Amino acid sequence: MVGGAVTETDGIVIEGYEPGPVEVYGRRLKMEYVGMASVFVVIAVLIYGGSPWLRTLEATTGSFFLFLGLKKKNRDHLMCSMHLFGAALLARAAVFHADWALPLLLFGATVFSAERYLEKKPQQVTFLPMILGAWAWLDGLWLLGLAYTVAYILCPRPDRPGATKILVRSVIGGAAAGLIVTAVRLLGGGAPAGYWLAPRVAPGQTQLIVVVGAIVTVLVVTGLYWRRLIFPHRINPLLFAALAPWDIRLTAMFAMVAAVLFSASIFKLSIDSDRIRPYIWHAEWHYFYLVLVVALWAAFRG
Image 1 (cartoon, rainbow, N blue to C red):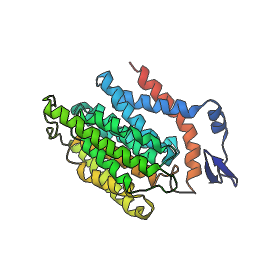
Image 2: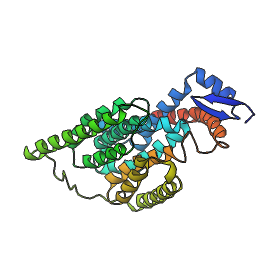
Image 3: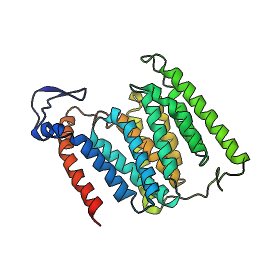
Image 4: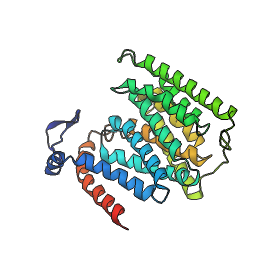
């Protein structure tokens, strides 16, 4: 499976990697697009299915935004989709039991915007005022979305002239938009009950066990990769890990933040192992057909 060649795949140099016939023909068939479309069908039908269709669409779109925030770091659809499945499973309770699909979408968009600041198109962070303003209409947890983005200001990008200035202006604009919308919502008397302090919905026993396991994993990974992580990828996972057990909405946010951490550390560029990475890249092209079959079964099972 692994030879002695040095291959550049999607901009990543992989020593010893030689594309097999499944990948060669898969690229011709654009199976990476078919595979990821199948991933979102699985998320929509098997994870969020059973809720009202609009709620399902909103929550699945949140997963799509998370994917956009992960893909430039992970660069591997197989590992990236595992993060998406895990985050969606942890967020499912918030969607079903707290009607939190639209805020989940907006937090996914927040994560995407902040991560794009680190990548090739930092101007996409300018969507933050719109995102946080819309979120502020729904509940007070938009402040945690704002806090998430503030951490990125402490990660300047001297290699991208003007990027940090765009981010600072966008974060300030997001804070202003959120505060204005909050004032209108509260002073106008139209704020939903529990805008600031919604009734707490604690994770169930099984979910709490999973959350605790995820928190321990986050702490271990953060410790091991501390020197290699940028500031927001250090501090945000710790902040949201501390909040995650309190309420299922916070659990949902933590799941997305954890996915970003994992994609920036142990699963960076597929997996943080030059020895294992070629095998994962081969498995990815077989995985697309598997997830397609699962998606078709989920869609037509009746």
